[in-house]
Image 1 (cartoon, rainbow, N blue to C red):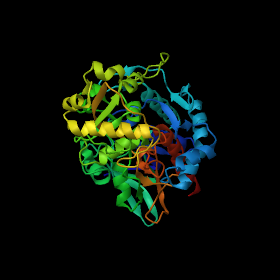
Image 2: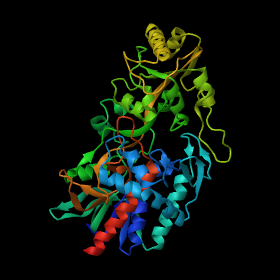
Image 3: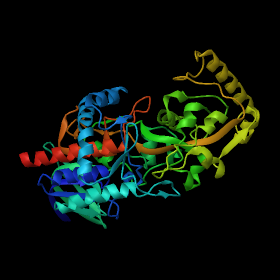
Image 4: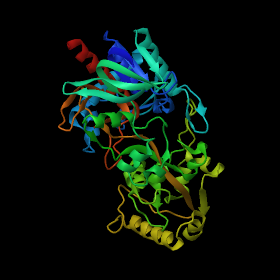
Length: 466
């Protein structure tokens, strides 16, 4: 068995992991970052990021008081973590800029990181954004004398009453004993672990489309739970409804997103009945479908006005992923059009009378401005007019929102919500910031960078103090 001593070991080489490792090594402590992949930049969700640096729907440079209030609206965030995240969002922008990471304002309240890229097809994403960010973080880390080991898979944490003193890992069939004064879990969520999806999200959630990395198998959550960590918000994830064709055709994931069509239309089951409040937003609706008994049975119904509005932004200066219109129609993405509900239902393979009845009731409720009976509708809804459009959809899971609960110092907490000495977590491995009835999405990159900064700073501080 090989021994690898260090001051700080970071598990996971995504944006959160590299941010944590860099912040720690900048303070003069010895840092080792490991990743189970053989790649030089890991294989996590970071490689597929669009670069949108959002903070709960607000500009990450906003007043921390505003950011805190925004993230606490769902009433699921842990107050000390939410406060630390809000206070450090603006600082994280300055830190990223100091590393040479490019940023542009692409719209009000939205910063894009490393925006100058191209589009990859099958699957569709902005292919250079995450790579550029990771390379710059890694290069700075290596300049400071940090060490990186690829192909090393963490197996279990070494824990005692005094806290965590490193971990046991595997590489090429050999056992590694990594002795460290502090450990940072930045392993991503459990979106690629079907057993965990069924256990925590819904009994048929394993039928959802994985919209993110296949390497996010819940390793950090598993190891943290084994030593008595508290986990929260495990039943929530960030994702979007996508065409059902994504299950068999990689061109349909992770884009196009259907946010505007969900907001303008209705979602029905195989019986043609509405079963969810579409006005809560696409992330919340996607969570509800994933929790249902028929994950593959949903159809999105909308009209000409909604379809015309789904052409995306008129922006040509930067590459953009394809909008629903005309992508879905041109690529035969289980997309249908008909002059009547009955004809549309036949094409979708759902109950014709049920859909006709649902549309009639929905339109009456819209005209009356009241959804007092049946499924409610948040916000203002409008009646749908023929011709009608239909799209068979499936939930696409990008990353899970729950994980090991951390406080404002990024310390992992035990079941009594007390810090487990020497153990920190960052990025999608954490719980306590995102999740809630209405989606609770704050922003994947801001969570990764800010919690990575907090974990690296405080892990290094503990090393120097002891």
